[in-house]
Image: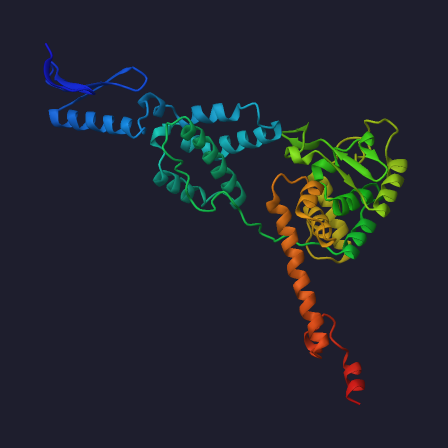
Amino acid sequence: MASHVRSSDFGHVDRRPSGQWRARFTDPEGRRRSKSFGTVTDARVWLSGQRTDIVRQDWRAPELASRTVAEYAEAYLARSEIKESTRALYESVWANHLEKEWGPIKVGNATPTNVRAWHAMAGKSLKPTALAQAYRLLRGILNVAVQDDVLKSNPCRIKSAGMVKPAVAARSLTVPEVLAIAEEIPPRYKALVMVLAFGGLRFGEATALRRRDVSDARLTVERTCRYIHGAWTVGPPKTDAGRRTVTLPGSVATLLETHLADFVADDPDALVFGTASGQFVQNHNFGATFRRAVKRCGLPHTRVHWLRHTGATLAASTGATTKELMHRLGHASSAAALVYQHAVSERDGEIARALDAMVTGNATSALVPARPAARRAQSA
């Protein structure tokens, strides 16, 4: 028979026939909870702690914390709002970089300490981009546990761990550089280079365009395409803001009109920038073609994505407002647009300083230094 020892308005402690001390209470959802201890003191301390957690609204059902990270990952990856291309990426990251280490762990046992330990160990074998992707996914999965009140806070607290600095900083090409690349690229892709650079489209947005999306100088962007796991995936743009209409410069629109006549079938659904067989253009294959054109131009290392970067910088240089840049580039946040405006603003400061040097006669710091012959003529 159990021996009753203590009762209160919250719970009570009694002694079991086995000699163990059992603490019992009713949780906020009306369920009876109990746990056994070797001493009455331990039972009372535990009971007091449970009461404190309930008063502070920190109490969590223990069975929730017993769910594994793998169970949370399965639910997280199955969410309907995730784009299929993103889901494929997440599934690959989970399977290759997280499942073995984190899958069996109970979510309640995820702590900043073991997150840091995993991150340090993974950093020895993973490339920076893969490590940042894995960290962001783990943080997203554990955020669900926070929302479920299983975790008080997310244990992924490593500063900037979800960000990766590109090995090569993007640069904005000059207009002559873009034109030179367009001349060296195969004729079928000349208009693609120009649209990427002067329209600011993402590669997947441009290569998903259909003939019906082109109306004079205006492009209607409403889908993007990606090659994932051996198959093409076509879906909406990266964000809702990606659905937009972009107006091309007149000269680029004229080039695109010629491109449509020379390389695109009359079918409204025909791809504007497809292969000779009418299929989507793979980023990888186009990248190789692009690099060969860059090399023939004698230019330094240049990536395809830098064409969009160029388009953004050129648009900012026209004096476009932040909202106008956001619309043209399909940005949901002003942060990226402000980066381009800031870059242009800094360049404008350099120009102003060079002009001031000319005014004050400090020709050595001007944008275009005077030629030696000109300086001799001036001194004469």
